[in-house]
Image (tube, rainbow, N blue to C red; front, side):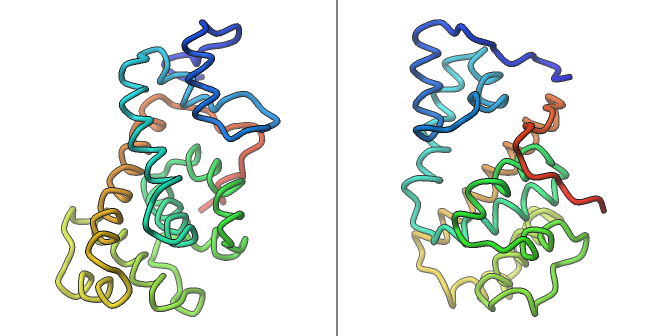
Length: 186
């Protein structure tokens, strides 16, 4: 059970409107529990929406790169909630295979045979930042081969953002969405 209960319908009109903005059109389920909890503080939710929506809908990174990063960040943080939401929806839409998604949950850096050099550089960067909160020159150089400065800035923000989302979901003890992909047992 979540430490702060998600709002349940009927929602106040401003919350209803905000939650509709947070969810893609024609989704067959309720807004995410994470979103419904955040709307217990509508001002905070509003501020978070801008960055989250910008990273997902208007980013400079290819969708598959974004979803590899999100899967690895949330897996390393042990956030089954957010990993499962993305694995069930956006990661598949971006083209990640079930094997690649499963590989993002491996304790060690996922096997390079599964990943292109660009994607391996992303995974290495996520792991370094997770382990040390630093990025070595070699990890940075590996990224620079594939990305422009604006994309690199976005990448660092994306990694930090999903670390924050993982802390939030884990700290709240959010239960996995019933429709989400299940986090593989380690």
